Image 1 (tube, helix red, strand yellow):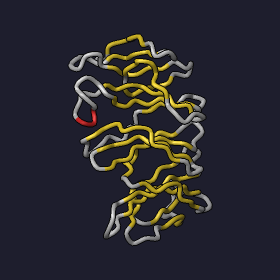
Image 2 (cartoon, one colour):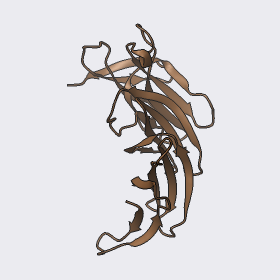
Image 3 (cartoon, rainbow, N blue to C red):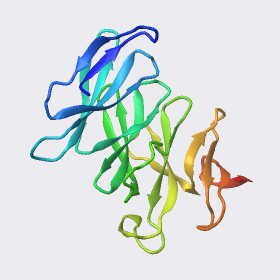
Image 4 (cartoon, rainbow, N blue to C red):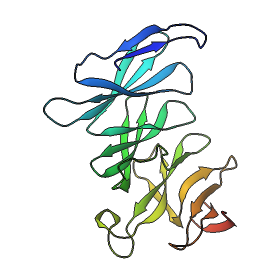
Length: 221
């Protein structure tokens, strides 16, 4: 696959909007931005010699104008896009070797690595563990951290903690001692997440305050 075409749903064919220029490159994925005007394109570059990489392109689907956002020395997990409320920033997953990482990209070309979120997973699910605040200026994400028995990347048992990132500040902050995964931000500003207090126990729906203090709401069946 080397070309992007755009057509009305009832049209028999579409018009070309963008085409790859390199013989060692293929179109790996694409996704509509929330404004229904722009497309995020992901191409995979596999040179005969050297390491493979991914190129992210921002395409105006009406005019065909395109510009490169970032080039990564890793593979983008197809479909793993969580768009922010403004429709210009998104969280996505990238895979390099045995590690899957969570990153941020915006339509102005900004890029930010946040954390490694999985290892030894040959086919990671395209669900980034993030939740955008309704106003779009903050982001919650879950990531494994050190726990008893060593560092999780080296084989220790992982504890999944929650972090809050203010897009105007460079360093994310841990949300107290709260543990959880698959966070969600309610319209009133409160946070809920899934948690497993015991390694072999059930999942619980947990509410987490701004100070990181948590309260179990219901057992998931």
